[in-house]
Image 1 (cartoon, rainbow, N blue to C red):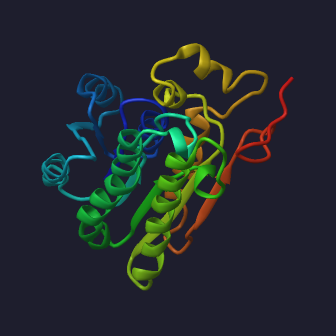
Image 2: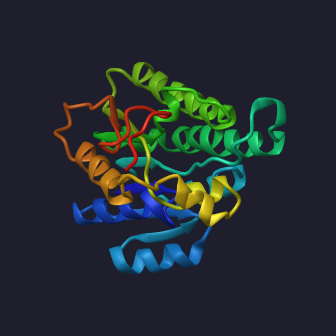
Length: 239
């Protein structure tokens, strides 16, 4: 059984489909329940409401997970693109609550079930923003650095136990991510991907599924994937 957070769209939805195709029963968590139900009907999974920023919601969600072999921490996102001197504390709080504390809550709550499975696997979707910093992105890069530090710490804390830890760090992926970051400005969001071929949600889901289906003695610690035209968080080639 696999749990995927942020499963109502983008990488989360694609990952749910990929894991279902590998034979996993997928428990889908997100706030947009109608989308989850449609995906559950498509994949044979189970839709359960989840807001990773709300402790009560997380507890209720976990109570409905009878067992767990794979946890995909995918819920997260960015808000705003202002320099530190002009950025919004509310946006920062949302990014830290969603990316860092959300991952903390779900992972902590499900770790006993992951260990009990005898072959548990925590896969956390961070970003190249967990590896680099860039101007006007401190809220997001700091949150992703913290999320990655949390995830990497677990690798050592559970050494010797039957649970694996994989960090997947994508570069430019064309999903709803930029629309959320720019407050629904679709033109500004589209410009992020203009002039190059970005990764798709399915590209990232393929990597997650690959990691989850390796033999249990194989731990892919960290996977960084980017479009061919992207060298770093700030350097791309655009035609």
